[in-house]
Length: 231
Image (tube, rainbow, N blue to C red; front, side, top):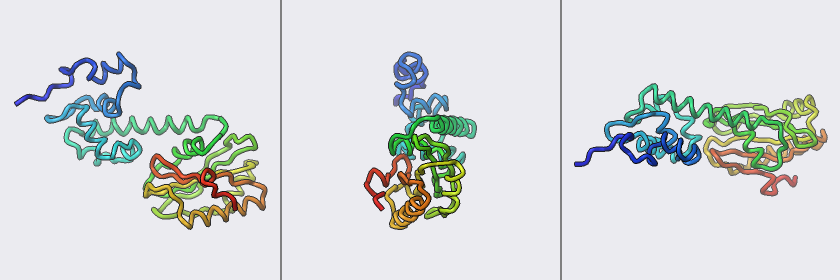
């Protein structure tokens, strides 16, 4: 019966740290990056193999992984409190970096730009968030704000609050956004009715609703891209 080799016995190209030094960080898989964080595996699996098991448990979705709790991670044999905290800290840093990038002053050119800017404001995907991005006439974001949060099916999007804030910021247009905790970004009939209501309210104040982005995990649905803002 062959014994499992320790990571130190692997070929240099198969060892994550050495591979990073030789080929750069972009050459590493997600499992290899996590293996560097945890340092070691368990009696049956190497650090890389254990990292693959962890990723398989969340369908290789890093957003889902970032939402796991300490106890969720510690269910994996070989992941104690210290390793679980290390993984959570690294993923939180990644989330904060993404938020910092989203807040850089640059023009919003398309729905993907909008999605990237809104995503960091959803701090708990198990709850629905209603977000508004306020823009000036050059399509530069003035502010992104979470208007309401809570529940798993719907949240309140009060037009009075949304357009009061738009007027205060001298915004010429806004983008609406919310997430579906189910992970499916397809709009419901209620989503369409709400969008129509807010588009109408914006017209009265000469503040355009230029898009409504629905977020589900790492994907999104754009009303504008699908031609659904012709109210």
